[in-house]
Length: 348
Image (cartoon, rainbow, N blue to C red):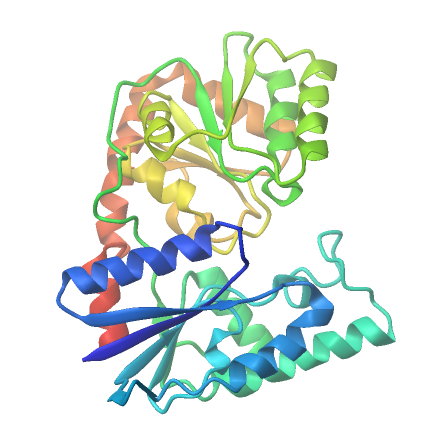
């Protein structure tokens, strides 16, 4: 079987969507599938999306160099607009500013005649091209619910992206710090973790891994730590290698994951591979599908005091943290988060 993975990429920007594509291609090839990836440059500014979707639509992937392509697996929006009679989509997320983030402080699309026009173009394009697909799988239940809500289409199932087989995440001793890793953007709410430190036991330490998308946001987080009087207990590591991230995760007493309505989030899976419990919030999105309160982690309200209470409990009760961490590692298999399951489903 000849398979092409079709995806859009933002030049010079590495993100979770790119990682999933690379992992899928590598894992399919390791199983003997003849596979390649078509990477379509894509500029995600909202006024450019409809025109670029038309450009994607003009691409016919029925064959390559005279060889018939048996299946196209479309990934990031709007790669599912490509033409192919046997097209399957593993749907990562919509152009979120026009869909689930519309009307919130996290969208740049204006709620005026022009903004609504462009939003309608995106809605209609997704409605058309997703319905061409032989099957549509979502990367999480949150994303599946959005497809039902915005496109009136019931996905064929949920496929959670696993880590690559050679990932470095391993269990380790439970140390004296909590950890939050990821891209530092307002949507990830690193500020909430810092605010919570105001109300934690003075012995609690917090390590923040990642680089801000814009320097101003990173500077604002550092100022917040100073203003909250917790700068001596909050460590900013900046960008670290994957190997270093795995080492720090192996040595922590628990992992925070606090975004607003996240599509998926690798941090939860990385923590589970490291046998660490995850603290997430009631409105954090897909992590709620994986984190069971008191079983493999803790779920609390998006409030600094509520979060601080959980952080205190997890930091002080290492026995409970170890117990939840062991259950976290078992969650991966139970939820089908392994490549054999994903690839078998996409090729079925």
